[in-house]
Figure 1 (cartoon, one colour):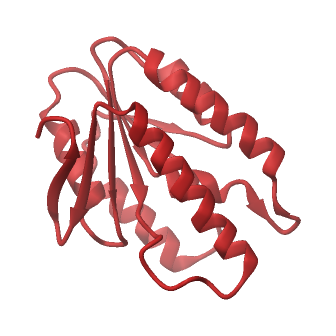
Figure 2 (figure 1 turned 180 degrees about the vertical axis):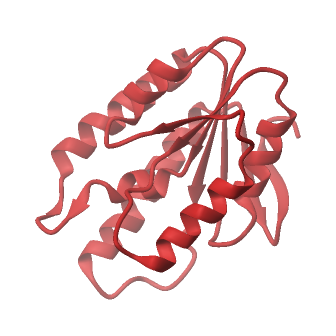
Length: 175
C-alpha cells in the first residue's frame, strides 16, 4: 500500500506522515533520504525531525539506492515512512551537475519496486512547482525532475494527500 504526501516547505507534510505512522499498529521504519552536510541550519532541521520520532522506530538512511533500502526494510506488518523524495533527488545533483544516468536507473528501480513492496509505504515529497520559474538551469531541472517523479509516484499510490497550512487534503483515494 503506497501513500504520497506532498506540500510546500513547512506545510506540515512530515508531521501528517508521522501521524499516520504513529497510528500504525505494527513496526515503523523511518527512511531518511537527506545527505548530511556541514550546514548548521540543515543539521538543526534534521535534529528537529529526529526529536519528533519515537525511539521505537527503526532508522534507515537511504543513499541513492532508495529502492534497495525499501526492499531490505519492508515487512508485511510494517510501515515505512520515506522523508523525502526531494532530498533523495538532491543526491543526484553535485559539483559535476545532474547525474542523469544514475537517477534514471534508480528512479526506474523505485517506481518498479513500490507496488511490490509488502506492508505500507508513506512517501513525503515537496510540491515546488507553484512558484516562479527559476533563473538557473540546474534549479529548473530539479523542479522538473521532482514534478515528474511526484506524478509517477502519485499514479501508483493508493492515496495522495496535499498538505497546506497543516491541513491534509486528499486528492486521490479515501481519507
